[in-house]
Figure (cartoon, rainbow, N blue to C red):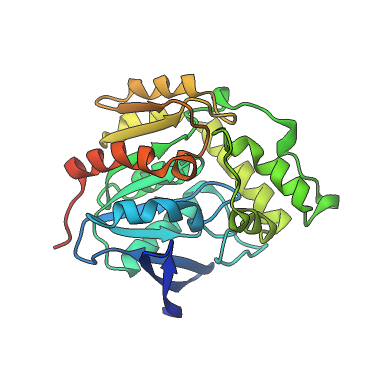
Length: 285
């Protein structure tokens, strides 16, 4: 079942987003669509403690040649945040696949930012017929690449967090000088439950403990693009070279940018992505 939640919304003043809610067995999933429906599909998956709104600055750069689909993973954004459903990475990936099925998407290049890249990898494992290629943006290849930070800790007794705690929590996600964290992204964190926040983060850790992403991706044999801001404060950017173990993988390092190139400098993030999708995207039948 698909429920409209108000029709088109203006995104960035230029793009009209068709916004809807998909009722899945284990919770409602919010979906946004932009661009021509007959263009090659591009699924964008956000990271932990974020939402589909983190892709807003990128959308207008991608819709000229793509049907852009964005989802709020369960527990995030405008999707449901149940306390009695699984937030494991394979389950999040399964829901993303069901969402594309409901939208009639048969093939898609899947792009994930941060832990969204982990979900994208799991989706490709489950649905190799659906995923034609993968692009991972500042997605750590293994737990060895993680950079611990005291600022990332928010305790249950502090929930919901104050604005100052939120900014401190989000600060390691950005490195560009003068960049100000958008208020709507802070609101996305504030809108989560403590359970959905901590459980989704543990789920990413668990998935990476089982097997590194380069190992998983090598088996899949899908075309792979890795984009990494060199000044990432959450994952060591030098770890991007680990993905070179995947045959044919293309790795792009962006100087002067941190963990979130899609927000810090959308045009620079979009350039290698569009070059990649021009080769690997599949037009709808």
